[in-house]
Each structure stands twice: as structure tokens, then as C-alpha cells.
Length: 201
Image (cartoon, rainbow, N blue to C red; front, side):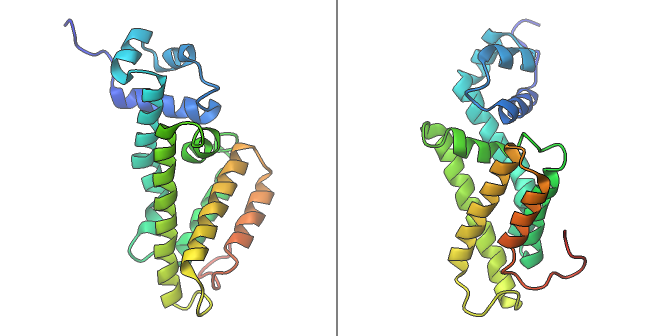
């Protein structure tokens, strides 16, 4: 039937996310996007308006879907010290496999685009605020359960953990040795109390 789309918008965005994640915005040409998405240039521009429009749609979906899954443990009502540690070690462990050289799309964008592009900066700023808020929430629970030193400045710790996790993700993108990332995560979370259960390496 004429006028009926022969593609699914969400599937196109998911394909674009992976390409942008591997190559960045500047490293991805329109021709590569057309080839990866399997649609013609006219359809891509009709759906998203521009490469920038597609990139922002990718950031929106990445935030809503991927980051929501990643941040769920530290945003949970009962999140505490273990949830914070798990967030860091989850990133470090991912560096041993599929995420090496890919990193986090939002963190990659923070480095590549946030200072240059207002559209990208809007998503990065929202992500940093959300991540800091999640850490602050989990730290509050940790403090109440005795997993932090009395009088610890929770706002400063939340800011530190946010910057530390962004650094880990950036190094994962740069294919830093996994043992270095595990060491960084151990140091970053060393202010937390003794871990319940098995000790992460």
C-alpha cells in the first residue's frame, strides 16, 4: 500500500544507537547510517529530519531504555552501598567483553559533543543530574545503615561517584585494560562499608 512505512522507527533508532556508540557522531557518515539502517536517504530524513535529529532520537531512547536498566539498582527505594558497588563493578566487568571499545553512548557523547552541540548537551546534563541524584539516594540509605563514616558529605560523595563512573566508562571506550578499571572501581567505592556477601575482585 502506498504511503505505508516499510520499517519500524524503534528498530532504526536501535541500529543507530549501536553505530553511534561504536563510531561517535562525527565518525559516522550519513551513507553509513543509511547502509546500517537499511533504508534510503529520503526515508531517513523524512523520519528524523537530519543526522542530528536521528542522533538526538538515539540519545532519547538510550536514556529511556538502556540507562534506565543500568541505573535501576541505584534508583531502587532500598538501594545502598552494595548497589553502588554493583554499578561500578558492572561497568568494569563489561570492559572484559562486549563493551570494550564501545563504552556508554551518553558518556561518549559527554566527551565528544556536549561542549559543541546544545542538543547533545541537554541529554548529557539530564544524565549527569540523574546519575548524581541516584548516587545521592543510595548514599543516604548507606549512611542510615551504617555503611558510611558518620558525618560524610553525601552531596560531595555523589558528585565524586558520578565523575568516577563517567571516567570508568570513558576508559572502557578507550579499551583500557580491565584490571585497571577493576582497580579504579575498588578505589572509587572504598569509602563504603564492608560488602555483604562475596567480595568483588
